[in-house]
Image (cartoon, rainbow, N blue to C red; front, side, top):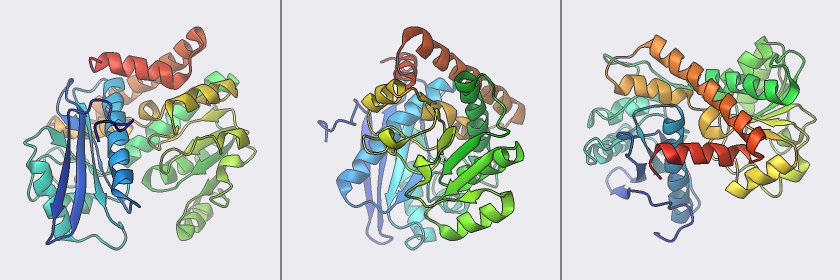
Length: 344
């Protein structure tokens, strides 16, 4: 495990099993240099334990970078639960997860990610205080995904300003892959701004409903990345920019809310060589963790969240400018800034 290419000197990795509830989970803590580790919990039906391990490591490292780039007093961590989010959930499963989080004594704060809802976390919170993204409580603000979506929407506009000299979405063709909580809100914002939007998701009913609501065009999941568009916005799972997909892209911008969009760091160099502007995912999608950080502080302030989100968009602009000046890929620029901030 220490030799795994995604390990990156994690401070700790914890495995949890509860036979009574069926919980199989992992919590990875990449860094607490800036504060307690914070990052959401993902529930996914992994093929193997090694797939689960790789995912939690990459997501945890991404949270270190994300929190650092957002200027938050938080380190990076992540939790994953192995299971089918539609079939395997029970209240007791998440109560067991809450006990697992609590056993780390505040070195890790959890919140929502793929497959997790505020209600799931409410069950976890019965056994630990280290939960954010709740609907109830003194500093609670609910699901942070709307703030993530707002950041992605603004980040798309920042990227378009650099790629096209104009940040107006009106008339732009944009392909959105994944229309969960974040992706669906991004679609709503883009269509409202006048963009011509194409959407795809594994949940066909969700696609049909959103297309009817917004006027977006439904596209097959296998084809969404390869449409003749200005912008591709990945908002599903990671590693979708890889050796197979990159040669088929026709867009000029990749900007979305999914984590770990590049299959490898080297893929960022290849994206740049293709003349495509890539918005580093852990910068553009930092709105949700900003919202979570406000909750963790114990006194939620919408003004503070807005200030941090606006500053994050300035940081994204600075990454693009530095990439242009240094002739480095945008992910290389962002990685260097983030690692400096976390003391590596």
